[in-house]
Length: 111
Image (cartoon, rainbow, N blue to C red; front, top):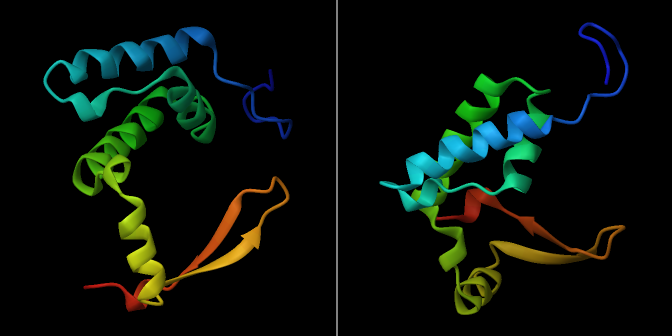
């Protein structure tokens, strides 16, 4: 792992840190099911915050609130087709890993 202040690669989060975040969000999920976070998500957010537990936890809290309000898992194929038909979104081929790329025109969305 890189030492603090070094310019080397960001160390991957340790298992204990990931476990602590998962446990925190499991406890919270007892009253807020949208707060449940898997290990992969916790690891990703910890890496994004360079191992800073407080920053990763705050970021995950905001993410859980966003998921609860937007409900991305409930978006249906017909809703996606409607967005394309309204010219708010355009398909733009694939990226290097062959995942779909879309252009989204935010100013065309409902305010």
